[in-house]
Length: 219
Picture 1 (tube, helix red, strand yellow):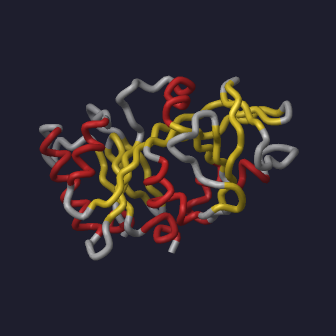
Picture 2: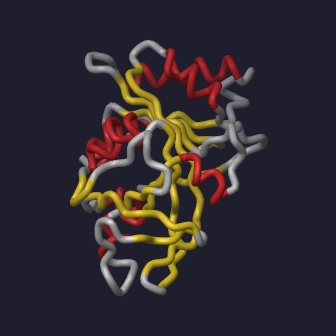
């Protein structure tokens, strides 16, 4: 149910290899790690059965609110409309709105960030600082909880300021996610995405340095 909540029709690609341990996914990078780029985003979007694609960069940064500081996970969102459709909408909004293409210094915060991380709750239209840069709060997500509880501690901003703050290269992503069209089997589409990425990165299943996650990955 938790995986369905985040989207049973969503496929996520990450750099490195990921193994499932007892009840938990554990990242184990082996050898060279594939750098995910705009080329991967474009190729994934062409795969039959894919309706929307969005990419993220993600790293920790200092979040300051009302003279208190916490180190939290910050995600920079490329194509926020697709992020809303494939992921954020499944969690839902407690208040406010999702990010849009027109946003620059706007931020959407997870439930725990708004209600539990600081002495004072973070409310809409308040300002928080991310590594010293001011952002206006435009949305607060519902509580995800369970195995998705890490999402409650996330902070989401547009991709451009995130690249500057998190110091990512212009053409580099932490994850790429694809939403699958109605009527298509998510695992079958994931297999097609994996085949395409192996092809363009000139890799085989034995030398693969990225992981494609769909519902079957967690079974």
